[in-house]
Image (cartoon, rainbow, N blue to C red; front, side, top):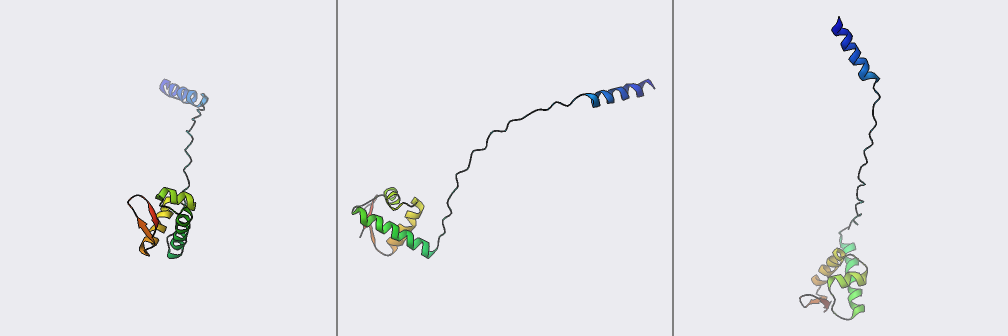
Length: 102
């Protein structure tokens, strides 16, 4: 009988104890940079080729891929797509590092 009272007393003690609230601060997740989705089809690649061609024509000299992208205001990936198109058509010449109109 004494054991039942002791067990009952422990049970009421644990119930009566106020629960401590703990606040856990989560580290702010870094915002992921939104990547632009590039639609690869003949029409879009053709437009990028036109942008690349116009940038090279306006410069009048050989440019690197980075310089072409900056001049055409397109990404380097888009620049490479346009360059591929123009190389295939025989419109460009390459001296190793820079590209110029043929």
